[in-house]
Image (tube, rainbow, N blue to C red; front, side, top):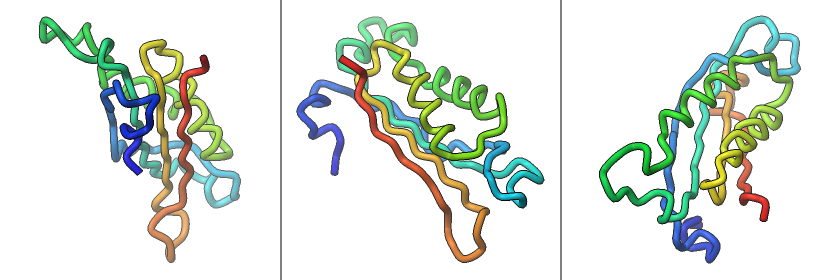
Length: 130
């Protein structure tokens, strides 16, 4: 389903960071604790047009995706995560801390856990609390 078809997002622009690959200390299995592993992160921010339509063609007028990339990297490298759910929830919280963000979708996937799976992952979609 196209999220921008949701009534609460009809006046939004989607700003995204997809396929962001990081080495993260994550996992609760013994073999996952031996070394950081690759996690691929996707973030979609839904920002009302009023906060994402520049008048002067200046980055200060929009939500800068450099912020998303650097904040996600800082969080992902900050500690060990037992669960992808914990990492996803942390990314969601830092995105929704930006009041101009109306909603966020975050997914993580670990492509190297099982040899017979392309990846295992978690996805969350949340609206800004009203």
